[in-house]
Image (cartoon, rainbow, N blue to C red; front, side):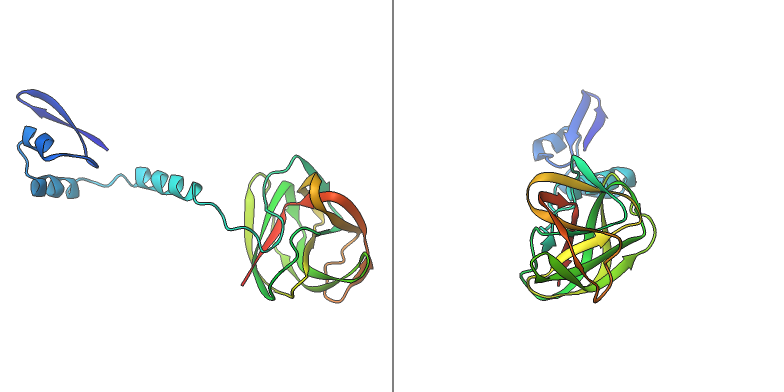
Length: 205
């Protein structure tokens, strides 16, 4: 922060982060006096909050352990379909403690779970959990969950309204089936759209 000091010789500008002893001599202050002066000034909380936000914005999020990154994507997948990301099956067993979602249009009636392959394109839901309320579109939304996962499992979801972010090329694919199969023990046959991915991923502990 730049401070201006008015002296008989004119205005002296001092950067509080880089102030030198020579600059402090121009305003007739020692280093200790200058530090005491700064400590006595009222805090600009709004500026501090903005600075903290800026720092957090440049800290990258950790990569997901299962599924795909929850980022803005050029397409979308409409509701009333069970979707399972073939990208990034789990490489460790444990518990999914949070999921991240990027909606292209607000999502409601959202349910997320883990799935495993029975054979071919037949998959069974292992465990699932409902996420209450609305998942607002336009940015990544992260929700705490507690969902068991085994090595080789995939993450999938269902939502009754809304659109989930989607890419249609360059990925492992998305299994899909009409209706809600995101309930423990439900087994179903799925179609596979090769190259697809949806913005749904999870973090395993």
